[in-house]
Image (cartoon, rainbow, N blue to C red):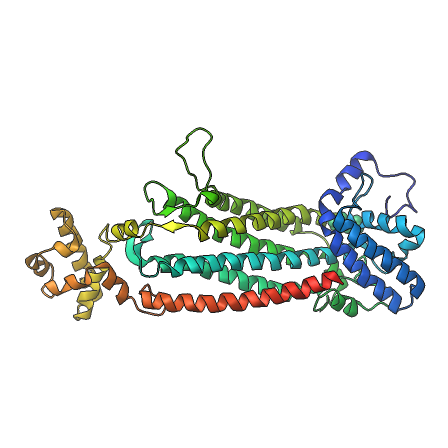
Amino acid sequence: MALWGGRFSKEAGEAMFALSRSVHFDWRLASYDLRSSLAHLNSLEASAIIDKALASKIRSAIKELQSEVASGKFAPIASDEDVHSALERGLTEKLGAEGGAIRAGRSRNDQVATDFRLYLIDHMIEIALETLKLSSAITDLAGGYVNDVAPGFTHLQHAQPVSFGHELAKHAHSLSRDISRISNWLERSNLSPLGAGALAGSSLPLDPETSARELGFSGAIANSIDAVSDRDFVAEALFIISLIGIHLSRIGEEWSLYASSEFAWVELDDAYATGSSIMPQKKNPDAAELARGKAGRFIGSLTGLLTVLKGLPFAYNRDLQEDKELTFDAVENLLLLLPAITGMVATSKFDREKMRAAAPLGFSLATEIADFLVLKGVAFPIAHDAAGKAVRRCEELAIELDQLSDSDLKSIHPLLSGEVRSRLNLDSALAARASASGTAPESVKKQIANLRVKISADASEFAGERKRFSGMMDQ
Ligand code: ARG
């Protein structure tokens, strides 16, 4: 049943209705819609627009609907246009026309904006908690490889040896920034559009601040035109989702490389790998590849939304209905991806010997020679040049840097003595990089300890948000 009709002589044409209909996707907002209806009802009752007796009838009907929606007993039917009209049908089926009293002082414009904020707050909290689980799995994995050396790369070429724990832990840092972004987003987005009506506010004596707080928002949006047309909170959430997706795609790319026969650094757990339908020997890193692939999809959602918003007139326009499917798609896919990547990471086993054996290849210790000379007072450009000559000499003789003879060393630079050989091994190269952010195992241990402190502080912040928010949902 349409929510209008007075000025219309006909029902919507079939094609119009099919285009307009959104209940097959916006039904995800049902529980939030009912909750915001309860808050609105309280407001109508407090201002005596609905008397106590009717308010209590409507309240019981909404509560009944809450459990019927949760159990699936109440569901949309073909003639329902959107979640709001379907739930209003539910209310009128229970109470007759009286149930419609709740529509006073409210429009679908402020209603949908409120529901969507509640949905996104709820789901961004879940995304934060899942991201923290991944972060924690990465940090644990990193903690087990602090003393293992692996080649570090730039340009995908061996650059300098690093602690593999250092290499792994870097991912937890990018995820930690994502968590801060969600926290920051939550603070900015946690405001209620309810009370804005269609666009101009309401002439009824309602109290949007009280309804806002009842719903768990920190307050009401200051400008009613902004309240119904703002979708910045969606754009920002989609950006955060895209960036998390990009971070996961970089983990995915790394794991795919590590799992290749050329690297063969990682053994994936059977539970997080897939086989081939034709090649029985195959074990493929599909979780890692899906992480890479889904990032494209998230960016697609973000781009789609920004394009809908660009140049859009104020206040509400139906274009805004296009904000939902792409958001649901991004949220749901990220929530599928995160636990799989956490599982893949947590069960990965790396080949310590293989990584150590690869670490000195490609003359990755050449910088040690330059640093040795710098410590002897040689200017860096000259030291760099000498180290380069040492590499060239090794290539001519097909030997490694620590095999250069004393006379070869001296001919490269007079201050280059055999003493340099003590630096030309992996462990001392690592230990030497003992700056706070450096790759020395002692530094990496401290970095990981700090990460753990941050992860547990973030986890309790978001567990608190979850509790606060679901407490509100249960009311
Ligand atoms: N289904 C609509 C949406 O998602 C709800 C708001 C409809 N408002 C209106 N004035 N037609 O945006």
